[in-house]
Length: 402
Image (cartoon, rainbow, N blue to C red; front, side, top):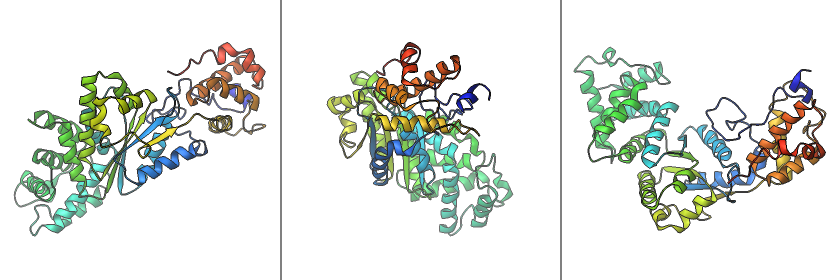
């Protein structure tokens, strides 16, 4: 056996800096290593609130520290909901952003996930079957859907339209959509169809440029129009997962915070009845939401109370052991270890759990450094005594989470 193989592993299973980024190719960091049993209560509560289609859900750490596992839970639910055929589900990192940027990011995520391409096909089908003399006929719509199940790089409508111009046909579709869909801005509808019926991949750039040229409207107004467009499609509800939502809450002064919460309220009101936003929240941000008047525009419609909140608790020793086994299992390869926790003994996991005070991020970092130290020392079994002997290099390297 070579190197990590002496621990019946293919690599160090534990992340050095545990923070979830679902777009990171490293499975130690992207949330794909997850044990449902560890967070069964939290997941059940979150799913119940999601299924009831609350306007907003707060996924809240119940202690005033980071690293409790909120992001991992949010990512699991985002991915699960993605598998449903009649809803949309997108994930955004809320750090350094505000509601205007959220709206732009959501529309971009809808585009990237293929939701908007499906929406175009659905709307065209309704248009072609509902109009007596459609500018784009049903057989054309069916051919586009059949030939392009996923978003194509380009569409040449000149292949299908012989009477009148392509631009005139697209404009008629946009005008029909505006007439038949409340609160859709003409500019948004035209930009949407003109781009998706010619060069679909360019929609985010074209949509952003169009928004900048509009007077008297902002990203939230355009987002409302996009939501309304999607109401005429297969998608009956929209889920948005905003990770690290506490960052903008705690970092803003009073004036900025009022503007943020007022805009966030507008976002929620734009999708009342068919939009659910799930946010992660630290206890300090939670305190601001509950006590500062600047936050009332948001909390008036999405109260920070038990109906809307899922609390994330510290891990107990048993769940800390299950966490360790889950990561170890992902890096066993073809090895068969003496027992599931190997190279750790149960007393080592208990000590790490106690030192980390049940904080998920700190547990994972200590486990990572324990493997490092074991590797340096010739791959001994990692026991409570080993952790104590190497305390400074294992526990001492992991600061408390603020």
